Image (cartoon, rainbow, N blue to C red; front, side):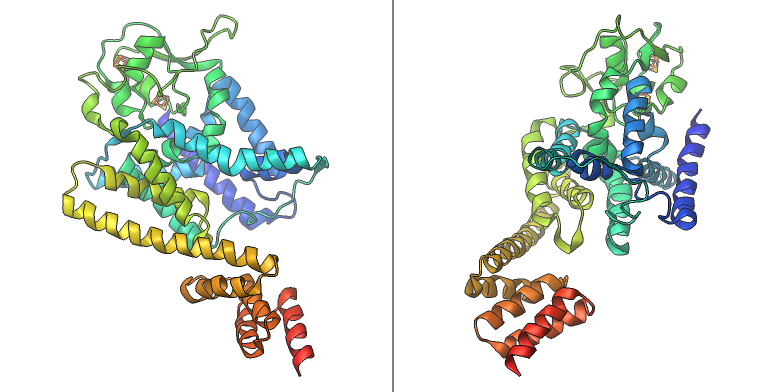
Length: 426
Ligand code: SF4
Ligand code: SF4
């Protein structure tokens, strides 16, 4: 069965290439999970990404999270990373932490569900169907940030947090499929005859204590299960089967990994995991502080910023690291945090002051941003130039207008700025 799964993951990438190279965006636009939130929930638009999410929701309600295990390109990259690490004789331990439940749900609610629902409540939907909009690159980052995202969330996260570290700790789409996964009528179920070999827990790529769950609940209840079928194939007594249960007879039990007093405690399995549960609160706080402080800087998306955040937090909290390593890492992180928070604070105050015509303040903050933020954003230079113009400092206004022009030569706002400065002063 695994060769079919690998073929499926490979085939998805062929489809992505065909989409990008062949169809362009003429017929099918962005096929991204984000579309469900940005397009459907927010404004009532149906496009290719929204149809994909409806398909994923429906299929999850019946078969569980097959989409994650058999079709997701992020899952595929982590599988490849795991394969390479195994070839190098490196077997990262999986982390036992409640953040696998909390963090993806937090990211889903904070960045995708709540802001878009809030918009929908305050602005009535205009229902529309546009399969070719937005274009396929609409929400994708540039090449460098894109490659960095794949490297951090596809490779580095597997090395530090174990197989499928991104799926477990970050992925908001996985969090979105948790509820339908809990209600799925097909699940991995206990058929009897378990001899507690621990193979299923040992081999589960998503870090589920299958041995514990099937003996406690008669099925895998963990909503992170991606239905890879590695556990059913590796059971020496064929005690596991992916099977149907009449939903009316099913005992629905939404407690999963989050609870389970004895989870990961059997002698067979506990050495497979690094237990961070006693530090979960600190782990969560560190991850949020680091994630929020770098999120959006250098056009970093949520996946990348929180991927970096959780790897860094883990390394600060991990026990076996030498103290000197921790100290250097912590100092480095503090420096980055201070720098990135000052940039974000200055951007916020600078833009806010400019929009409220408080030009003395906007100059103070935007000057700091343009001096110390290596990522040159034309908008900040335009605002700074205009602030100088409004306070009568024409030479500075011209200086920053020229920089804005070198960043976005054909932008309408730059033309307006030039007209304003030069037509009124020459
Ligand atoms: S519980 Fe079984 S089917 Fe689910 S992810 Fe783990 S190994 Fe795969
Ligand atoms: S692999 Fe099979 S026998 Fe071994 S613990 Fe899991 S269910 Fe039991």
